[in-house]
Length: 191
Image 1: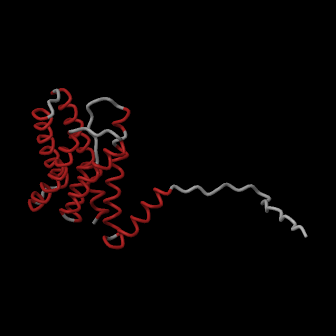
Image 2: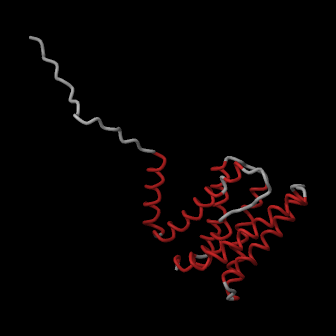
Image 3: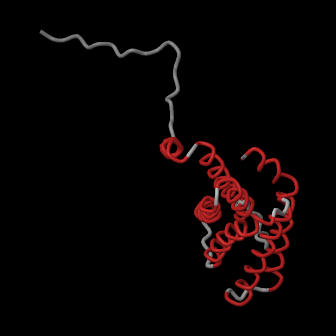
């Protein structure tokens, strides 16, 4: 006796297959697990600074000019003040590492920049007891970072003065806008 073939069910309304991005789901699950151990607030702001810096530095792909705009300084300073030195160091280093891999441009000076952002976290923790206002603290740390980068760029990397000044001035002006315009607001939300 022959079996009857069952008709395959066809819905009356065509449906679209639910497409998932496994990387995003994995990152979300890791974020949830880590936030259970570390704290949701810390994980949120640490992730926010790292991701926003990586996205901001996509500008580097399209503009071939000596411009250095980044959220690493703001993140390192605010996370050091709010969550402590270890989180400031982590945000400073991880934001540059993530941006480097996201953009896909790995240069020799990126290692020096990572050490510079770690130095910003240390400087923030050293200068915090002086009770400087947030703008003065952020700009002091940023100016010292830019002096460090100037020395590295000039004497180790052998860059042209024009490029070094372009990077330094754009970085200082961008951080001035960040700290003066948004620093207190973000710091208030973080606390």
